[in-house]
Amino acid sequence: MTKKKLVVLTGAGISAESGIATFRDANGLWEGHDVMEVASPQGWRKNPELVLDFYNQRRKNAHSVLPNAGHQVLAELEQDFDVKIITQNVDDLHERAGSTDVIHLHGKLFESRSSLDPKLIYPIEGWQLNLGDKCERGSQLRPNIVWFGEPVPLMEQAMVETLGADIFLVVGTSLVVYPAAGLVDLVPDEAPILVVDPNLPYMRPRPNLHLFEEKASTGMDKVKQLLQEKYL
Image (cartoon, rainbow, N blue to C red; front, side, top):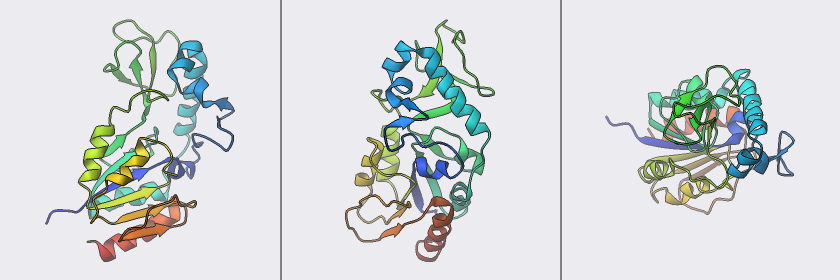
């Protein structure tokens, strides 16, 4: 029997429970930095050393944390469903929990890429990427992260997956960062939508909308139970 396709959109909330700082706090700062200083092409041109150091610290932090129960339940759901995870997170916690099909919309923290040719991508061993680290064509390596003002290369793939969803699950995202937030509007009308977040985003009313007003580590157990009882 063909497994139902469960498409999952995850955001900063699920990683925050593992101890990874969320992208923005209430006053638009990220770890004390204006996000445009460390997450934009302009910031990179102005001060590449600051940007490299910022992501080195993010990598060092990510090495020190573990996937939480929310990540683990998503991986377990692959036993019963064809799970496609679309994440706004750049960490590797989904993969470390055992998820096998993950689209990283905003790039990957543990990869670098050529600042000359975006197709030249390299794994980062350890946590440091420094000035003077160069690609095979001799240009400085930069984090393989989608910064503000840059196109989102995997968005089209994410849209195709969403259009084919039998069930759509939203975990740990406020649905305010576009274009990712727009995926919800592409979910087929007949597909149930489940949302898990302690601060539930606005969702327009529709049949089979299930809202869980709690964090991923506890809410995902309830989601798994509902999915197995109602949608298997």
